[in-house]
Length: 249
Length: 313
Ligand SMILES: Cc1cc2nc3c(=O)[nH]c(=O)nc-3n(C[C@H](O)[C@H](O)[C@H](O)COP(=O)(O)OP(=O)(O)OC[C@H]3O[C@@H](n4cnc5c(N)ncnc54)[C@H](O)[C@@H]3O)c2cc1C
Image (cartoon, rainbow over all chains, first blue to last red):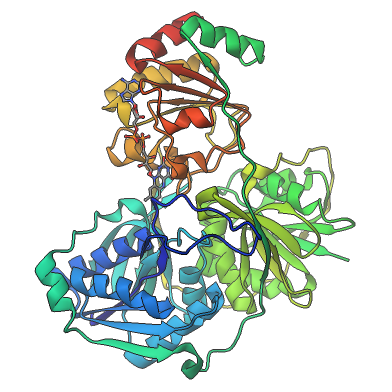
């Protein structure tokens, strides 16, 4: 396999307790820690391991988003990616348009495998990978927890509601990653220095001539209904009594 | 008038309860005509089950050998082949629907609305984002088809007793051979299914081993409950992946949820927001799980849980 393309989305760090803005126009992102979407980090780790095993020759990371997404791409380069592509846009961009951007990069780069997270932890959409596979007309293996290559095929174990499903897909293909696929490496300081010299190409989204998808409008954001704090019981007898009270035991 | 196509989830033998929940959501659109489509190698009994679901006007079956296992890349083009007659196409937000529905949306040239938790109109929906930290109301364009997955924990299954007609649908399209099913490993269990159980008992990292999980199973069996787990317990190999509850596991809404030795990380809590009563047993009185628990007990689980099982006897 030649090239692996990995999507890295810049998102609010998973440790941040996200708050809705008081005017309902979005969530508070000023001064909030931003990171690589954790599932995408797993996708990159997997790509690097595939390359380190000698099964691929180049790992390219791509991000679609604001100028600041360079930080996440630099982290990806420090982890070991060979080069980075930033498709720059300040506005919101929907999953189908993202999929179309990936497709346009694939057309230029001749990619054998696309790895990306199974969902982004900001919009929790879980769409881009599947959409890319559909418009590319290539196989998908979503929610992967194990990937093994045999020639031009991949055997992928998927985490599904009923257990672990294994499918076989022909390459090129799209694989989206689940949490148990691997544990991403830590970035070391010398790697951060080295990453500064790697190529990071920036292209404005407008230059790609991507067909716009019908817009889904976000009307208003609200905080979810709170579950109040309940009662504390002193011991198991108290717990049993409280359950009986509610008709639950 | 809205014409809604619902893609049935099944295992080749039985209909998954997620289908009747998806129907319940669709029935919220006034005057909607609801059709349920079954893609299977043999659809007969599954179709008969679907025909009984309240609000369903018609059941469509597409039988072909490629539909023996649900593979998104194979089902999506067949759905697209019958999509033209519909204003809305819904599937459940289970791993089945999450794999399949975005492909349908992409082939139809629209974005999907993921995890609908409520309907606000024919084209307006509420959904949770940021691991459940925010609710956003979204509006799909009125002039294109709406493709959505439905958050099954937000709906009670539609009732039975219906006798909808069953018809064969023509979805004869050429299918790719690039994706092949190999096998499915699932931990067979006699316990109630986690996603539909009225009561669920979950264990976390604190259980410390697969053997220790036995005390969780014993309590669950006493209550007739399903069993779940935190991500930490799954990652550590105490229990299989299909037991994970949370943002990236199962979103559930039992009447009773008992969290044992689980700290209450936001990613876990988003999976149990809609539970009726949440009970927490944790030895740390400051654990965040107590902020949302209806009944809390600060105790060592290795003492409290066997004692509780005994007391319920
Ligand atoms: C992208 C992403 C997605 C995630 N998705 C999920 C998800 O879907 N589901 C999920 O659960 N997590 C998810 N997580 C992980 C989540 O952030 C937490 O790490 C995880 O839920 C912690 O599991 P835990 O509560 O079992 O373990 P811990 O946080 O370690 O908590 C263990 C608890 O046990 C208590 N305890 C210890 N010993 C005892 C004892 N003897 N008796 C009683 N109590 C005891 C401790 O006080 C502590 O509160 C996700 C994380 C990320 C980054």
